[in-house]
Length: 175
Image 1 (cartoon, rainbow, N blue to C red):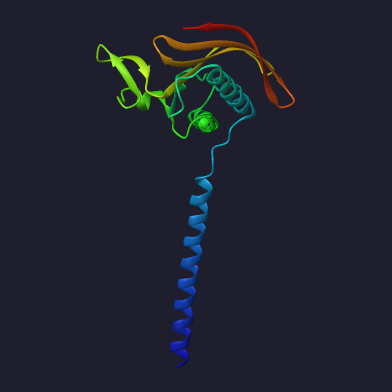
Image 2 (cartoon, rainbow, N blue to C red; image 1 turned 120 degrees about the vertical axis):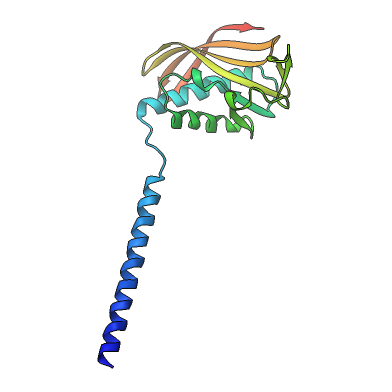
């Protein structure tokens, strides 16, 4: 009887040790899935780029059924930071995409010559053109494109004050 109790006790201890090990592996997996660290510099750029694209969209747009963003224009950002820019733009539309993922989608764009974009179908393409940048000052153009004859190109002088970017429109081009 004594041997049987000792055997059961050993089996219970081995089982519990296995459960504890599995739990610690799960905790390690959870910690490796945490959001990537965004540097203060990247966060400043995220805030600037999102503010400028929102301001350009507010100037004129082709609709909000979708937003497509040229992520390759977001200089100085890692891929996770670019994803955060897309998330910031979700207040403009529930459907925000990387332009490269939707550029051939006939439900979002009308094409001429079978391949060139002529206009969006109730949506807007956004990107930025960065002319100057420092931690506290930038000259930046936001582009809101919705057709060959439908786009705005507001250029802003941006100042970083009180933990946010303040935009001042300095010129406007319209197509």
